[in-house]
Length: 287
Image (cartoon, rainbow, N blue to C red; front, side):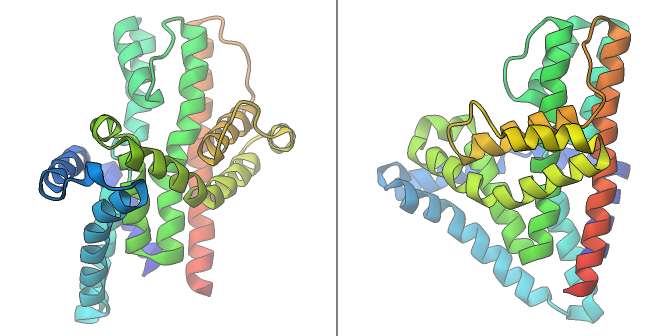
């Protein structure tokens, strides 16, 4: 049931892009605005504010999950699990973003290339192609873990509730609206997500090494992070560094080299997904 739910959700994401658009609904902002207006969460301490925002959603998922457990020969439970996994992936589909980025490089559209790079990296990238491509490649390794691999891990370990909790923490952290109105909550989400993401991120690091250049990746892992100031930043820095050195990395002197290195980064993620699915299938049998 666990592996089948994951597999169906991944297939739906690839074959039904129109459904992916539903994940972009800014429901969290609307929900947060309503909670702030009703309960004045901005007056609460960080832990209390985070709990008040997260607890109602988690309770609803927990109740529904219990209601659907083994219902109608397990079909309702399967459908619910698929829905939870699907809507907790992303929210954007990484592979399609990479395709658009590669297309922008090929046609020489620097503005579109910049816009898509900004979406993938979640920051203002460089306009220079050689620097920008490296930024995008490193962001791909982080985004693959956040959007996909961590979701697989937490669903496998603790089920739908854990998956929803992970995505809520990630969305709270990256919500520009909440960063302004509930700074204490976003700061706490940053702290909690760092610890929650530590184990799946380190499994992903190992998978990147196995799926690519193991010796180079292992060497960078042993060196550890350099600029990280907390657990969240450390996880991301290691994912970027180990992932980038797990492919045959090189300079980016021209567009052909740029396209090649981006494709290699995506190829590493796709091979890592196969390894993750193998791990998931194996553990779902043993659990």
